[in-house]
Structure formats: C-alpha cells, structure tokens
Image 1 (tube, rainbow, N blue to C red):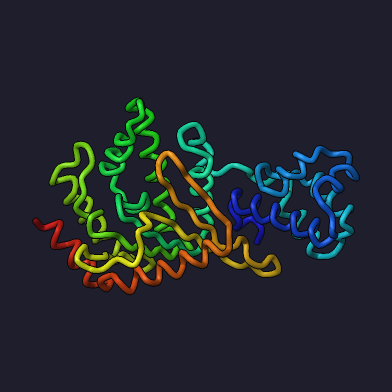
Image 2: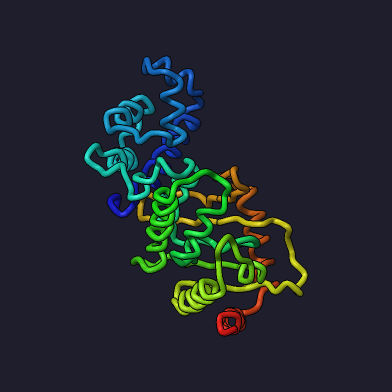
Length: 290
C-alpha cells in the first residue's frame, strides 16, 4: 500500500501527520526542538515537507509523542529509509521553479485534476511543437537546449493521462486559447494542436469543454489547477485538495481550504457556462478543419 504513494505525496503526508501529532500534544515547534535537542528549523522543515524525514527521526518523534499503535507503524513505513525519495521530475530541478517541480509530483499522485485556462493551453494538453513555442515566449534568455528539456518535462507530465489507474482530468478552456498564436505558431501547428485536443477528448478519463467568447464569463481569473487525491485503507486521504496557479514569473501552490473551496465553485460555474463535451469536441474539430 505505502509503495503506491509517490515520493512527493509520501513526504507531504508524513509532514502533515507529524504536524498534527505535535498540535494534538499541545506543543509548539520550539518546545519539541528543545526536548529533542534539535533546531527549530529542523522541526519546521519536517512539518512543512521541505525534506523527506528519515526513519530514525520519525521514530524519535513517535516515541516523544508516545505513538506506539498501528498508526505509528504506518508512519514509520512512510519514512522507510530504503524508499525512493526521487521522482522523474527531480531531474528537472535546475529548469523550473520549486512550486512547478512540486506540481509535477502532485499531478503524478493525484486522482483528479480540474483545470481552467483563459490564455494558453494547459501543459498536459500541449503538443510538442506548441510546448516548444510556449517555452520560447517568456522573454528569458534561454538556450535552445533548456527549451528542449523543459518541453521534454511537459511531455513526461502527460503520461498521467494514460497511466493506470487513470487520472480523471477535466479542462475548461476559453475559446481564445484555441485561436491564440505564440511566436512562430503557424496554421499547420495550430491545426495539429487542435486535432490533438480532439483526440485527447476521446479518452474516457479526459473531459475538455470550451467557453465561447460570446458567452458571459463567470470569472476574470485567468488560470488555476485543482488537484484532488485518493484515500487509502488505514492511511486515509493522502492529501487535502491543492490549488496551483501562475502569473509569470510568479508560481503558487496553496493548501488553503477556503481557496480550494471557492475555486471549486468557480470551476462548477465555468462548466455550466461551457458547451457540452460533444459540442466542444465538434467545435475544436471545426477549427482544426479550417
């Protein structure tokens, strides 16, 4: 069971449970650090998931909190020293900001992803050529090699759409996204991209809907991603819902419950304002045929 949880979610789950144990004991980080003769920064890093805790450190904390039942054994299993603390995304740490790298790991372990984009296509739906153009448009002085590696990372991300068990993926796109071109995007490249969207929309786990420009929009938010995670026997929910949004050069991950709730309602409104799945598929196909 534990082995089914990817490194990013294992680290986050363990951090959340260590934080909860401390709070249930009525202690603050300074008190725990002093008792264990650790630094307060170490406690903070463990409880925020900045580092993957060792089995030794978790065992010491469980002993301090007097946790000796099956729950303690599960937490120790999460911190097993021989588990792989790296995901494929870690090899791209030199290319993307930390929140984006974390997003890659969260997508890999999510059970459902809901996306709204009003400016460009979501990374999981981009063709290689489209992704290459997006990679060049930021105004950075980026070498062709770095653009290629960033594109490769996007293509690696897209494996979540065809993995087992399948990720439930729902995207709502502004019509302008389907018509907007970047850099050297030509008519053929956009036709290929639109045909790719039509093909993806045929997958049973993928839903793509379009909000027409003539349709009143329920929000002026340009983009967000809502990630939901599975529950597992004994362990419970691996993570609460997480929100990701970006406004280059700012990239944000939020675990705030109120933010996730509000954006979930916004997504529902966007779905209601959209064409149906079939109408959206036919519309994208009509654009590709021009």
